[in-house]
Image (cartoon, rainbow, N blue to C red):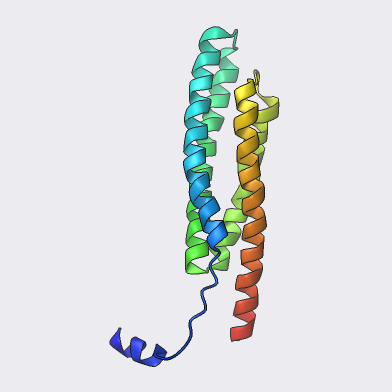
Length: 151
């Protein structure tokens, strides 16, 4: 460790990680937890008040759990890729954005009953996704350019 510090002494280290992307990923993690709990409570409400077919509600709750798993993995890879400046991890995060976006669109548009609160919650989540994909692509380009300059 001391030898590596001696070699790097006096050299400038450029940090390529994106602070706005990191802030968005952090806020999205908290917002998605809030979104998930609200959706689960709304499914309990809809299941008890509305004439909900049992197969539909079971499928939609399973989708909600799968959405949480995929979003957790996506946020992990996005954070790890941004902080360690790894293109592969950030690319996996961008790729996982597609199934999470379709799951959110399903909740917004195609589930059996859509409440007004769900429209608001899903719209905010989709705005987070849109902003994150823009910042992730810009960060991927930055990482790629830096890798090409080093070689």
